[in-house]
Length: 146
Image (cartoon, rainbow, N blue to C red; front, top):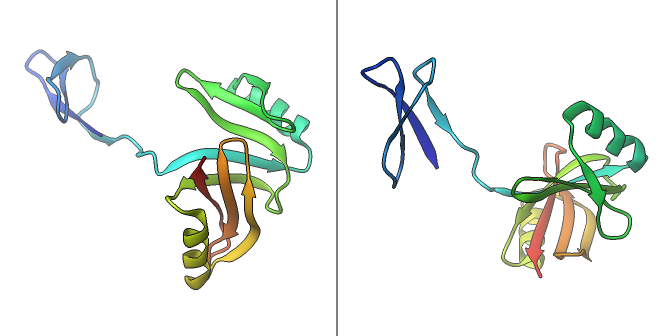
């Protein structure tokens, strides 16, 4: 979705969202903003010290932790959960999850494209996933919804 900020006649701006009508709001500058797509559907923090990590994000960003599936602490916003902190999956730090139609096929394709498989297909609470490192070394999880 793209939101365009256009100059209005009264010093405000007209916000036009594609596919909907415009509305006037007070915006101090003229700009075009692109809202991030949902290419990543989940974020998992793979930690050697999950309780320390949870405490850090709770204090730094005011994220409210809640109990998740065994071994995981969830962070949620207004639209529901968006991330979890849990055990180290062989890659320490944040791991973005990208949804794929077939985790086996996507993993094979990633390997052909130069990825290193860090954790082979595993069943999680909401589906199956595999964790890999791209040719540049960044971690990524390929996830197939249950």
